Each structure stands twice: as C-alpha cells, then as structure tokens.
Length: 252
Image 1 (cartoon, rainbow, N blue to C red):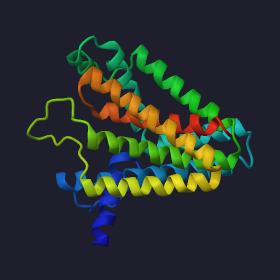
Image 2 (image 1 turned 90 degrees about the horizontal axis):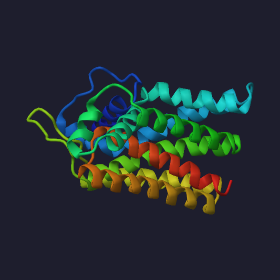
Image 3 (image 1 turned 45 degrees about the vertical axis):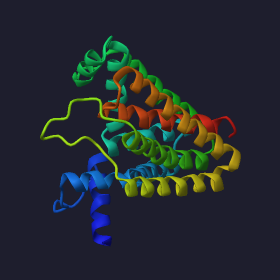
C-alpha cells in the first residue's frame, strides 16, 4: 500500500514538474486520476526548491536578485506549466466572443496580447510582493503559494465539469472523494505551518484571498465556458498563489 502511494506521488511529480522520476513507474488512467491527491504535496516540493534557492542566494546577492532567481528555479522545475496555462486561458477567455471561439484560441500555441499582459503582470506582482517581505516570510510564502495554489486546482477538478468534448482516448482530469480529502489534509498542514511562521492574522488573510481569487476565476470560467480546461487549471493555480501572497502582504 505504501509502495502504491509512493507511485501515485511520483506520477503527480511526473505530471506537474520536469523533475526526473524512475522510468518504471506504472501508469494507467485510474492511477493518474488517483494521483491528484498529491498535487498539493508536489506544490510543497516545488516551493521548498524555490525557498532553498531564495535563502541561499540571499546570503550572497541583493534581495531582488535572490527573489528572481528563486522564481526562475520554480519555473525551471515546473517547465512554466501553470504560467503557460494562465497565458492561454487569458487569451481565450478575453479574446473569444463565444465559448467555442475561446476554446479554439486556447488550443493555439501562439501568445496573444491578453496572455502576454496577464503573464507579465502575474510574475511582476509575485516578485514585488516577495521582495517586500523578510527572507523567511518569502520562503514560507513560496511553499504555501505553490501548495495551496495546486489545492485550488484539485477543488476545481472536483467541483466543476470539463468544458471540452471528451473523446474515447482522453480521460478528463478527475479527483476521487478520498483523493480530495488527502489533498485537503495536506493543504491544512501547510496552512498550519503558515500560521506558525507568519502569525494567525497574516496566514488567515493569505488563506482567505487565496480561496477568493481561486473561486473568482472559477466563476469566470463557468460563465464563459461552462466548465474548465487544463489551461484554466493553470490560471486557477496562479490566481490562488497570487491571492495568498497578497493576503499575507497586507499584514507583513
């Protein structure tokens, strides 16, 4: 049983990052669906890598440089997976006048004006916020943002229907009830760490805005598309992560 859970975690790592995993990890549609329980834990891993780079670089480089290097490290680890989704979703949602046109635009690999502006502003805001707080607070925010942002993805998968037509060879992202509980438990542990490290008020404010921005974007895609796509999940993660940073920055 422990071996299977480890394999599910490795599948989640393989799906959400560019980190190497053993080549003999078994795969099936059922295992892929069940691996969603570990998305927040993968976020912890990505955030810890960013935090380590941040704290080490901060010892020898100017603070803004350290922040940018830590963000670059997380982008390299994930292959800018969620950032790419944000850009595509922005192009489709604000460039398409109908749901069909929006979905068509999202399939286009070219970057449009809405996507470029959204991505640039997202990265700039996150960098500015991390530069404005202490090194240890920034390290905690990186871990919390990446983990709770991926919990927002799990929530959207669990509560929202898929927007595209699903073919016979494609399995839409899903999460099992027990998988949702495991993901939520991980998120709550991360939130507890934020409370201990940042204080109850700052952590509580961060959690509220994290949920608020993630849910706001969920409402937008429901109104525009009637459901979510993979690109929308990337955008949800980015919005929730930004919400956590903003909420904490109000008090730090």
